[in-house]
Length: 451
Image (cartoon, rainbow, N blue to C red; front, top):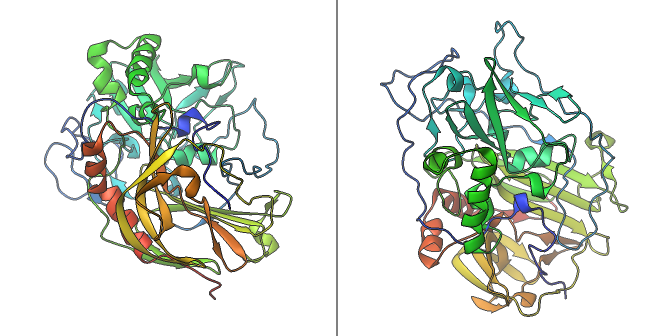
């Protein structure tokens, strides 16, 4: 039997989010600290302060590409070697300022920040100053140790702003940005620090990109499983950046297990292919296929999804956070999950909700699962599990994949991992807009060989 093995072992720290730290989830309106937007776009009449309103409900097109994520202990998808001395350069306005941001990078929601910036959380502190007003992730200059210049891959949603104050801006490398990077290893994960100098913003990339050079958000630190270490690491990060403790909440965001939007979605769109059909909110998708040897299959080759050895689909919310993920693999392929290696780890399910998914063994349910290791480390994430799975038990009894005809579906990690201080924080998450959206999507999700 295929089982879940140690979820976090060997994972990229930027993808981990730990348990610990004070405070309930904060889902209130953003602090009214910014009042102007220098980029001319159509707006509703508004008073001073932040007003969040929908700028449109255009359908986001599904994009094709290569996914760098792979299941635990399963052989990774082979991707072509990427250069590590250059940075991808995205379309941006001309230096004269006469052109506007490319529409493909323009967020669908106006958050009241300049230059279409997207807030990483609901309490972003954004100083009303010349420097902060000029912050534009599409024009932000990135310098490597070799002196090579480039811009950040993706648009504002791929790099939401955590805070801006006194010539320092903290920018989050979102899940979407990590997945889309055309040159893995050239940009740190976690937090990017931009500085205002000579009337321009720039980011200096360290000579060696690795976990020892990376700085992480509170949710990412919490996901590493040790509450005590999260605060200690954050203190060290602040020292390395020269940020005073009194400025930490303004530039590093709230110490909570997850950053998300304020309200659940109301508009949903239907999507379907020969493997999956569902209804989803305003998400952006990325899908890919691989052959039996792990080589990516280009969409234009016309390979049927049902014939691909592996098919991956990910969805990202308006802040670039992954909120949905599935892998469909052929039985007997190199992508089949491997056996459990953490027999002492236990699990607990919270927030169980029915889904529309039917596996060969029966229906599946959505739940927030929390794994606890023998050492006491805890990690939580959202996914689909068999309805018959008990609310508590050994993690080795939780299969990472379920059977559906001639394929294995891996659906256990939609959102996560997350780190919760206690059960009250878990309960707050189960009432959050993010989980409400997940329940709605799960209830209408179907897998079959459809037309």
